[in-house]
Length: 83
Image 1 (cartoon, rainbow, N blue to C red):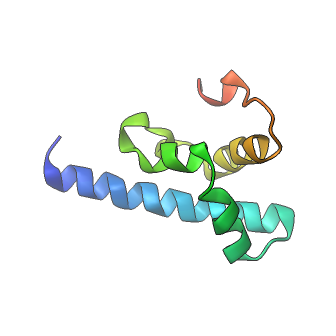
Image 2 (image 1 turned 180 degrees about the horizontal axis):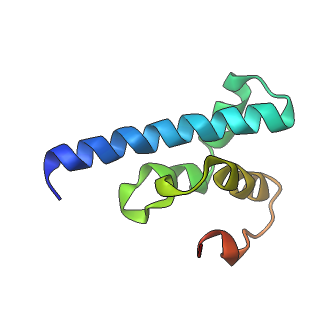
């Protein structure tokens, strides 16, 4: 993968993370800052930003559900990873 492609994917991954934060804020009646704070402390956030995982390509709503599972201390159902 060329450096330019990698930069594009990284930009899209960051945009996906923003959309996930917005989804979390809407679903939980949190401010965007609260949602970002909670999101950035999760392993799912790290996986979204790691372009090699391709998690950034998933639906932000599904990713938000994964984040909520992690925040509640629940195991994330494998079905979220295999779509």
